[in-house]
Image (cartoon, rainbow, N blue to C red; front, side):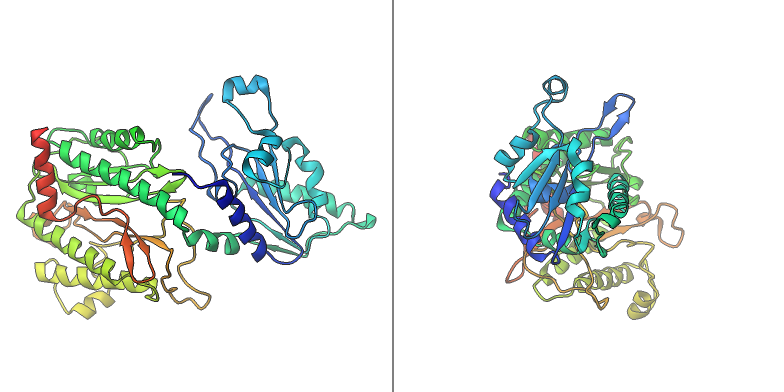
Length: 442
C-alpha cells in the first residue's frame, strides 16, 4: 500500500491553514549524495518534503503561500532532459508535477533565483527549517539580499523568520489511518524477517549473514531498503548500543541481538530481538532476559491516552532497577538507587522514541512548560528496554558479564490504550526456543 496523492494534497492544506497570515514557507527536497568518486548512494527523499508532496526526485523546492490567488502550492523542479534521462531515468518535470502530484503551479528549477525574491517580497513571515539544509540557507540569504537591494523601489523583506518545524512536525507526529496501514505492513515484513533469522541462526555463522537474511526477506517482499543500518551483535557486541560492524562470528553459548526494520513508502519499522545463537538460553541469560521482557510488557500495558511520555520511561527504570536488586547486580535501597542513577551502567538509554517517516521521528517530547507531553491517539512510539552488562564490569559476578539484551516493539497509541504493530515476532523464552528449533526441520 502507498499513500495516495489526495493524502499529500490534504497535508498541504492542513499546513497552509496553520501558517501565519501573509507568510511563505519553503521545504527543500534532498539531493543526491556521493558515496565515492562517481558513485552515489541510493536516493532517499527528505521526509518533510515527501510528507507534503509524494515527489521522489532530488533538488526540488516546495513553496507554500497561504491564500495566494495563483495557487498556494508551487514546486520548482529540474526540467525534463531526454539526454540525461537515458542515464538517470524518467523525470516528471513541471508539467508532470501538476498532472501527477496535484501541485497548483510548477516551474523549472532554473527559474528559482529569478522568481523567489518576487514571491518573498512583502511577506511578513518567512518559514523554513533554518540550519537544517545548508544549501537552502545560502539561497535564502541570497534572495533576501536581492530584496534588500530593491528597498528603494518599494520591495520589502519579511519582518520575521520562523522555524517551520513547529507546524510541520506536529502534523507528522500524529499518524493517519493510511499511514498506520503502511507502518503495519512494514512492521509485519520486518517481523517475518526476524523470525527467519531466528530459524536459520547457527553457531559459526557470521553476524553479516543474519543481516543478509533480514535484508533479503524484506527486499523480496518489496521493501528494498532498511530504515537504518541493521545491528547484529553477537556476544559482547550486543553491549555496544549502535554496533553496525556486523562482521564477527556467532559463537555457541552466546546471545545475538538484532535491531533491524525495513522502510516501506518512506515509513520506518524498528524491531529488536535478542536470542541464543544455539537456540537455548542459559540460566543467567534467562534471568536477565525475563527481567527485560517483563519490563517491556509492563511498559506497553501502561501506554494509553493522557499518560505522560516520561512515565513510561520512569516505569522501566523502576522495574529494571528492582530486578537488578533481586538478581544481586545492585545492592541498596530501591529509591536511593533510582535517585543516584545506579542503574545507568546497565540501562543507559531511554525507553523509546517517536517512529514514523524517520526511525527517530519528529515531534516534541515535552510541552511549552517543560513537562513531558501526554500520549495521544495516533502517536507511534518504540518500547525498548534493555540491559547491558559490560564484559569488563568487575562489580558483578562473571556469569553476567558480556550479556546484552534489548527487546523492542513498535506501538501506536489508540483511543483506549495501544496496539503493538510488531507482534508478529515472538519474544517469550519458550516461543523463541520453539521457533528456533522449528528451523531444524527445514
